[in-house]
Length: 501
Image 1 (cartoon, rainbow, N blue to C red):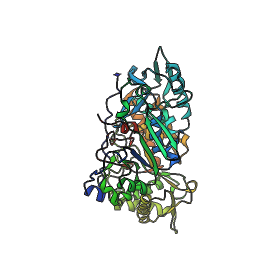
Image 2: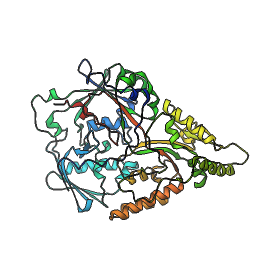
Image 3: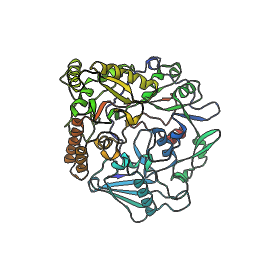
Image 4: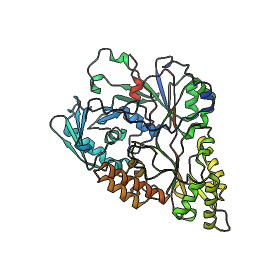
């Protein structure tokens, strides 16, 4: 399968959110401000801390991923639509049934002046992959067997079994490549006492032909790390053109006045949003007791607490409707009403702690959105005789809130989040073995069945209580170019720095 400008756009999953954010959408969400500030600047704020925004490690926040992707390139990258596009490699082929990926590198040099060769890229890529060991991304990359430097500027990646999502993985910011001093991305980051500015590199340094007056077709991006309230207020005052990083935490602030002056963009993300079980004791000692907690939760009511319309809840660990879903696992308890489910849950839980009011503790952030979620969960569990309290610390929690966007659209990503190697809470060695067997399976149908069996094993262990897909949103002025909602909630800053012709 030859690819000069990357593969065809990834098929979009069904939209998990079509929220109606009260006053904003009712007001029409009109963008009334100009595309740039009055001084010609273009300001982007992330609802996050500076430490997260400018982190360059291997466990990045969502904001840190955006900045690293702007300053460091991998073989491929993601564009505004969430599609894989060329970066250090300008074309590629996939052969041998999806087991061999051949990349042709673009002409150019590393920032230190050394030639961009297949051997230097092989070394840099192997280094990046090694750095991710012990992370969920490292598990995702486990099928990579060998990186070869071929003749000229050709790099070949061989995988143990077909990996249709390898290009999507290679586009992750953590797989940006460096060799010696200097960064390889399309933009340069400069930080000083006045803040941080991203500036576009000259075309030649981006692997493009020289172009006269190229600077007139790009703009600097002024970056800000702000708390949600300040970011929204400054957007409303016209000081900032784009606000990124909206999630459950800041959702209640979406009912404030400034939002009526801008546009809320919702990303149709897939991922994990639910409760990870941290210990197998007390009310969580057995899979049946853990299932009782899951039974008691009215997922549609969670959305009503936020006045969200159109959210698709799920009782599945893996997002429904993925291309490699064999249909072995379906929605749970569909034959029971909410009242019947809670009756079953109450009976099980009462038998586990006779004569006393059992309690569970949950590790959950203290933000406007999470306070609403906690109150709703506490009210629901009280109906089956369970008291829910906030944990003193994450280490002491019975349950941990999980709110994480998928990196690629396969059951493997979801299963890897619960791998025992990551030590994130209760896990299933049986599910890990099944997922591991799937890595060695070359037959597509058989591999999907093994992944389905791994999901079934995790589901029956009840170590995770799903709610639905995460919520991600942004504020973007109506005439801003280079921004598009996508299933990864990833919005490349270089795309927004290029002025429309």
